[in-house]
Image 1 (cartoon, one colour):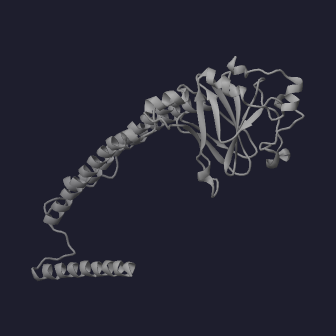
Image 2: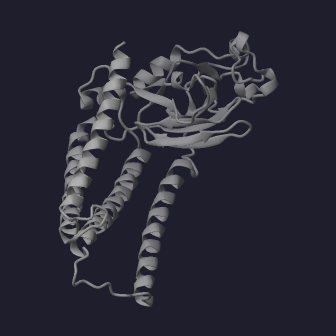
Length: 339
């Protein structure tokens, strides 16, 4: 019943507005004013309203920037993140300069060059110098943006530090499995035909490859050490996923059938970031930023950045997936990257 009354009120309001517009039109015609033709007064008022609108738009945007300043992501927590933030801010500066300049001119011109009885348009069809300027200047700006962005891409996906700890990030609908390379810092061979979720062999590890005997897998959350370069090898089972570390400002597509790589060095531990943010419940997260299906929203995974000692203690509690084979042929050791 309430919905019906609301719909009726809306319908009556629309009818009222239409009737008021009709009355205004008839009264204007009685006064000898053609309602469908703008005069000088209309041009002046519309031009002034346009100018006031763009100024109000700028004021609202500036207020919004200050309002959300404390609600953004905390400081970048990786070496890559620092460069990423610089590229991000550089792009925003260019965008704001262009936005404010073009938007102001767009609304200022109807105010400044409004039609008046004595005004006459000037026909100006061509100017080679002007066209050269508005072609060359944006081209230079875009070239700078692209080159600057490529430097970040190279930092994220280029040749990693030889001492990097190797970790596999494996995505499937709708969770993550993280596999550590163990004491030899080498990931063992996998085969999709060996995938068996019932036995927790989520990534299809091959027991015949000795390099994988010390590998172990975790789900739900994973740990990385601070100030140690990490090389992530990313794989997906059935559809494309996005490996996205928002606090480290790093991401890459996770594509079925191929291995993609990204790397970074975490520079702030979880405990330190909690102090920086004044949030005792803060946690780093791994997200999927590709809409990979109906359960996409279930894919956040907790990431813990430990001090070296904390990481060693956590590693000591982990057990290789092929524990029997590992214990028979290998001695316990910390990963190469931690030595």
